[in-house]
Amino acid sequence: MNRLIKNATRTAVSVTGLRKAYGEKIVLDDVDLSIVEGEVFGLLGPNGAGKTTMVRILSTLIPPDAGTASVFGHDLHSEPGAVRSLIGVTGQFTAVDNLLTGEENLFLIGRLLHLAPTERRARAAQLLERFDLVESAQRTPATYSGGMKRRLDIAMTLMGRPRLIFLDEPTTGLDPRSRRTMWQIIRDLAADGVSILLTTQYLEEADELADRIAVLDRGRIVAEGTPEELKRRIPGAHLVLRFADAASLDAAARSLREGSRDDTDLVLRVPSDRGIRSLRDVLARLGDGIAVEDLSIHTPDLDDVFFALTGTPSKEQNQ
Image (cartoon, rainbow, N blue to C red):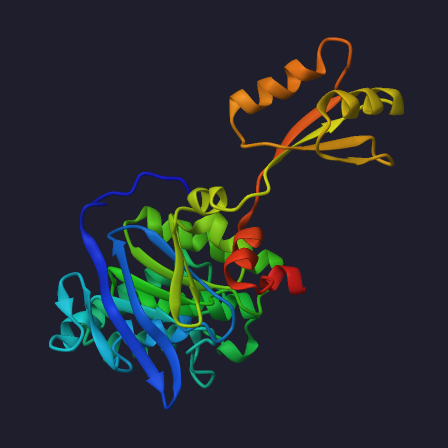
């Protein structure tokens, strides 16, 4: 997600040397990361990489074995109450109470946050409207679709107006339409200046939403950067040249003397560094006598990055 981040010089989350193990299994191994205020920070990794453990530590649910972490300057160890007042958490599984109505779920959170009754009702009404839940507010979540439950879950998280939200696999189990709705909700939150730590196995999701991404594998951060920066780290970019007939394809293959050809689709794929100079060089070598019907540039996507860094196919590739 390419956008201007307000307050980009302020640090929302700072982590140094974070370590967590369960017995002999090391889940987080000397992890460093920093999230600036107002950004969507994507934490990617295969199952068991340590993503959920990271969220549980940063939300003060469990302590680290070593290292330091702070949220908006408040240390997790010495100021856990201050940290909790600034954050909201939405996990892989909705935290709604199926015995209460949607509205009552929001009221419950408001009471736990010690909101005054008038503020509690006003905030609940505002969030029900924002997340298109007004008509279902008096029904129990047991009657909701998966997407509706997830929207209610996020609405509950927002009752306390958190400055930082942890979204741990927020679209797991949702149908494509509900996933897209959730993406727009995340974009709207980011536009409001809320800082977001998003964990996901969906590479398309991270590409669409994250300002920066860290890839976590076997407890370590193996790469960090914007989606475009990560893609540029992986070789494999090439020009795709399509021709109108086999004769043109043959002539191009003889002129370029590199790349791979597809005689069925009349396509020649030529290695490229994605630069303008490389493109001009290929066209110059073809000359005016060889007509290219179509030209495109293929660049590695986050699936390629994920596989190259972790050796594990992404969730999309497995589906």
